[in-house]
Length: 259
Image 1 (cartoon, helix red, strand yellow):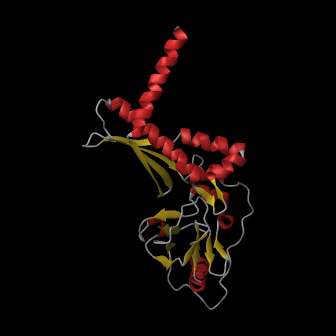
Image 2: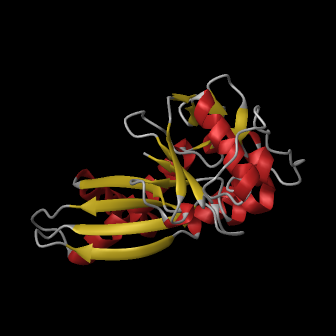
Image 3: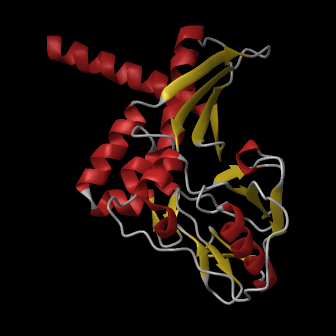
């Protein structure tokens, strides 16, 4: 009899959760070095504020987990793929998801609750990059400009690539390529420590980003390869490589992709 009562209570709680979840929405954002998800629960008659708050947080965590799983690591792999293939990576990502921070829970004027949870994409040992990127990879030199007479007269502080309208998908370790297919900037060129601490790139919604400094080299992408790799023209690839020789903008990971 006691067991039946316990089961009934659990079932009632599950029904409440399901009912509340019907009135919830979620959204996610990748940018500025983190992955953020929002859970939203809209008020319906009979809903209790504390319950709505909990469901909003639960939805935010759930949507964050979905967003992380669907996130590309490279053009060829997603976090979900890597978790399925590697138990160590799976354990690390699970720990990061559990440790994701609730940054705010607010109640709007219409009675709805909005919860935000956030996980660092890079920035240290508690970031997603630290869990999914391969350590101890051999670091390769950046390609050199083809034409030795190309020089960077401007002391560029970073690189901004305008990818707007090209449906760029965020990734932990995207690659920048020339139109001829030459990789001019990739994870292999900066190594694990830089990729984890600084991030391979930053995703932004405008051409002005502190990461690229006050005098960035700004170029426009010609297309996207494999959903997350950026392709620039041959001429712009030469400009980028020449600027890197002069100012180490690529070696310093001062790279911003504008979506």
